[in-house]
Amino acid sequence: MIIEYARLRDDVVAPTRGNPSDAGLDVHYNPENKSIAIIDPAFSMRLQTGLRFGVPHGYMLQVMNRSSISAKRDLIVGAHVVDSGYDGEVFIDIHNVGNLSQIIEPGTKIAQVVLVPVVPFRAVETESGNLYDWYPITISERGDGALGSTDK
View (cartoon, rainbow, N blue to C red):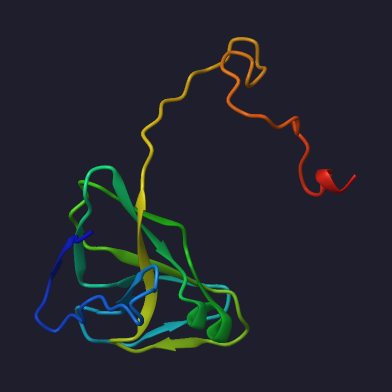
């Protein structure tokens, strides 16, 4: 599948794919003012990509961590969904979960975007409070068990 993208400025680094089999396209830090970003421990920053994407109907772009940024630099990408129909700049929220300040220079790969199919759905409220009674869509008997409940 092919999707369109647009650069907001001439100097914006285009999205890249490191290997033909990679799931996502890498996006880079492309600040309008060409400044470095310094993210202190326990702080977050919203970084510009300088990119807009034309996401087809029935799909979304999911912005995800690059393993090298998270494993080597303790920088975690916040949860992002770029919906079909959104045509503004894609920003990346990055959180520093480490103990050292991190410097991000312009042109640095900061995240990856993965094209994901979207299944349209609607929510129906249950009158009884019991889930799965109205429409049994699961084969699980798990119920409200969580956090290790299957190990019992």
